[in-house]
Every structure is written in structure tokens, then in C-alpha cells.
Image (cartoon, rainbow, N blue to C red; front, top):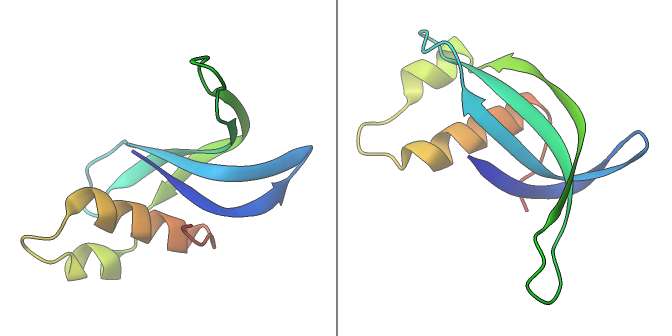
Length: 90
């Protein structure tokens, strides 16, 4: 899963995408994340992706407990992990 974020400074550039992949399913679940600088490809060329930072992060117990039935699971996870990393989705 990935989402564009309001760019943040991550040496030596700026991250504009948050990528997450589920890890331990918990509860609460944990995730592997990457802060990436993604430059869209031009003329049919693929995007250029530079990983600036990666690591692991957990959803909080409160977020896990509040996860509503019928929610868009991908959106809920991206919102939770963005918030935990102090990022704003674009």
C-alpha cells in the first residue's frame, strides 16, 4: 500500500510517498514502511523511486480497537500509520 504525503525533508532529499507492508498481524498489527522520493516517469518511462528511510512501526492499540467494521481497510491503515509517523497524506 502506498500514498502520497505532504513532502517532508529526509536527508538527502524530500519524501513524497509513504509505502507500507503488513508485518506481524498483532493485535495490534505492525508494518514495514518506506519514505520514498518518487518522480513520475515521462513518455511511458517508469517512475523513479528512491528509498530515503525505512523501518518498522506498529498501529496503536487504540487504533486497532477503533478500527470500524466495514471500513476501507487500506485507507484506515494508511491513515493510522501516516499519523503515527507524523506525516500528512496529500
